[in-house]
Image 1 (cartoon, rainbow, N blue to C red):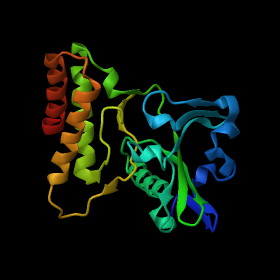
Image 2 (cartoon, rainbow, N blue to C red; image 1 turned 180 degrees about the horizontal axis):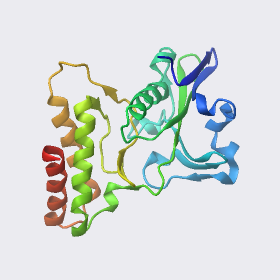
Image 3 (tube, one colour; image 1 turned 30 degrees about the vertical axis):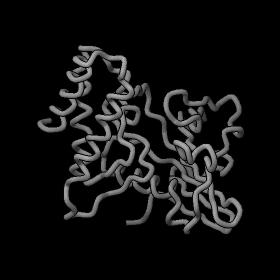
Image 4 (cartoon, rainbow, N blue to C red; image 1 turned 60 degrees about the vertical axis):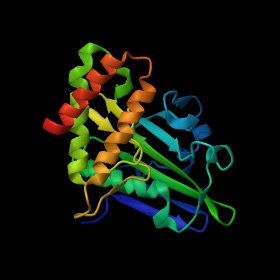
Length: 237
């Protein structure tokens, strides 16, 4: 079966774009300044490098790939170029495309791009369709939100059963809308069959640290109640 997207790569960079957007797509879409007032910075998460985009074909999200932590202060957008197949936005686009077409709750990928910088580096960008009315799991912090956390656990379990490794599983990358979604699959991949399941427990441990850090102002009792609801959904559905 053929791809549902088109690829174009040359010495200066390249892009992938969904066939449904091929006619209207422009590489300028990766520049928030192109959109003017139609680009609104994402204030939650995104490291200041994501924008909500309003366009004729619907609401989109543009994200520039940026480093976090101490490296981000020095080489914020530069990644070492090792060929188009290794470009991070391309890898995330392809993973999202696979999961979206299999019916998993992920954003629909629209376009991915990269541009070469000097001899060794590149900058990367990704555009996905915005999930309507979505809020991060970290917004659901009352006793009445137990069912939402249980649904989040069930959602993550489904990805793990498919063998999907999420490199940054935290409660900002779990969105709640008409159902529970996972977003931001940078460095994510499908684990080869037969590999030991230890990566799943490590994924859940990472999420637990995120819950403790981001929900630090909750009472320990409530935080534990919500976390146990998540585990109940993950373990039992």
